[in-house]
Image (cartoon, rainbow, N blue to C red; front, side):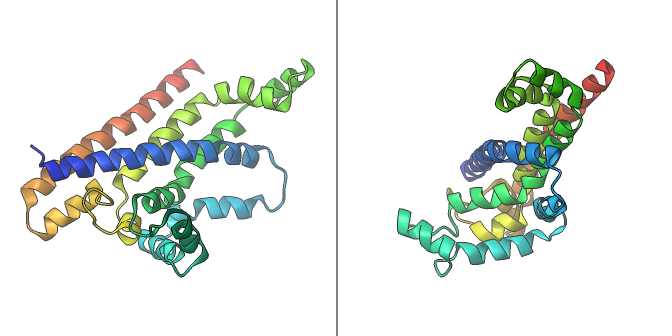
Length: 225
């Protein structure tokens, strides 16, 4: 049985993952579409920037985000002048950090799904006088639906398990920035292994269910081909 503090940390984790995934899908979809269709020679620069969280140590990314969120930098100053509260060690800061470090887990599946669409299908829609926006929403998005499912699940699952970035920019404030991974770390530090085990099992189960959803969807898509 989880403690009320663990339930609060778990609820905050799910809230953070849901909000971050929604923002990532809204921002990542046009970016992934552009990357899949552009012929710009400098495309690799954007792809490298998007993929940086895959190879960068989370503490490094978290450190630079912490610097950017401080009241001494323009981003932190702007947020504090608008809201009256600091951006670092806040839930909003966690959301911004989550969007950045989970970006490749959403953009890359979407880019692959858009790239796999047969260009002749889009050309046929164009001959029927479908506008570029119509072709995107009526043709490209439905055909890329498996990519959307994979992107949403991977973005959500990655946010669930992140530790380094969250600890750097959010700290460990119960009810505000203490997510499940931080709560587990705190249990281990205080030698409360039974509590750490119970919360870890919940995250393990959630992660397994999410990954099974992705693989089951991929298997059904392959069988249809």
